Image 1 (cartoon, rainbow, N blue to C red):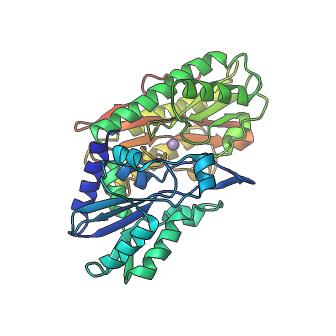
Image 2 (cartoon, rainbow, N blue to C red; image 1 turned 90 degrees about the vertical axis):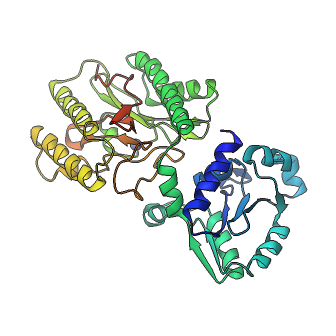
Image 3 (tube, rainbow, N blue to C red; image 1 turned 90 degrees about the horizontal axis):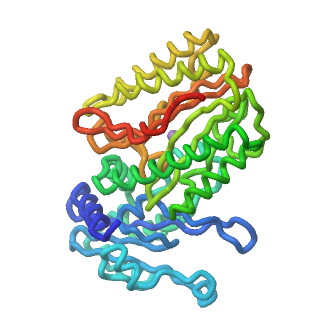
Amino acid sequence: MNPDFFASNRKKLVDEMHSGALVVITGHGEMQRLHDEAHRFEQEANFWYLCGIEEPDWWLVIDGSQGTEWLVAPSLSDTQRVFDGGLSEAGAKTISGIKTVIDRDEALRRLRQLTKHHSIAYTVGQPQQVREYATFQLNTSQSELRKTLERIFQKVNDCSKTLRRLRAIKTTDEIQQIERAVDLTIKSYDTVRALLSDAKHEYELEAQFGYDFRMAGSKGFAYRPIIASGKNACTLHYTNNNSQMRSGQLVLFDIGARLNGYAADISRTYAKGKPTKRQQEVHAAVEQALYEVIALIKPGVGFDEYHAKTDMIMQRVVEGLRLKGDFREYFPHAIGHGLGLDVHDSLDEHFEMKPGMVMTVEPGIYIPAEGIGVRIEDNILVTPNGTKNLSRKLSTKLV
Ligand SMILES: [Mn+2]
């Protein structure tokens, strides 16, 4: 993405916020993996959206009242500079289109001065949903910045809703990047599919996807890949991919490449060997649901109405397969989500579908007692007239 894209996103944010708001946000910090080794760095999506910097611990300050913006470089030790490098001032300016780069001490001095004009600072806090459900350690950079801002300003507010609203509607450039990530993922799916009958372990197929993604210059997997044979597919976030596969099993794939910041998220379920009648029946029902749900999507459709209708479709699928109990037992996840910089991009700030949204549609049926799990997931762009299925070129067929 060129600096104009980031500049235009900053302008959109300032225009959406009350006039003259002060926004201070941070990128992610690095997370420990082992001893003195960090995990692969992943930038916080809102921060990237506004300045394109892919390095840890940078800050961005936008003062709407003055029309000024600065980047704040992290304070690196000499050792860090030798071992990790780090982005130069000039590099940061070129990527972001922001003309001023200052250090942390200068930033804190300037922020204290800004209290003359601003009693409130807006920042991006840790995501609510993650705070409620995640069992892992959260990146602390956002909460640390918030504490710093709370010491300086009377009030610190969150502007992540505004960013979620903006990010839900993709520009032409963003759609093009998502399409490229989708195309790369599809290409690798075709390669992997041809290997399925000879492959013995799930990880062999994971390795092929990883190879294809990196060979195309992509960052790699947009999220931990799922290659789940037999009943492994009934564990929704199965990512070990270590099991031996057997002929007669279904294999569920949920895979996406990340390319130039943007993610694809595509699922398919294939038969290894000859599928049974029951496997065919379950797969056909999910495939049918996929197309019925996609047909519901067009601008102006409310998400409440959409979810009520998709629930009815999935309930009918469960009954048609003669499964007993609540349909939610067999379809325990959402029908889809927004797709973009985050694999789970939010659409929540809009109550209805709008052109420029990109969303996944991913009906699934999981029957642990029968060792069958089927999910099929396409990536759908909402257009002015309806939809464009970005992943339609990849066959949904079982065999
Ligand atoms: Mn998905």
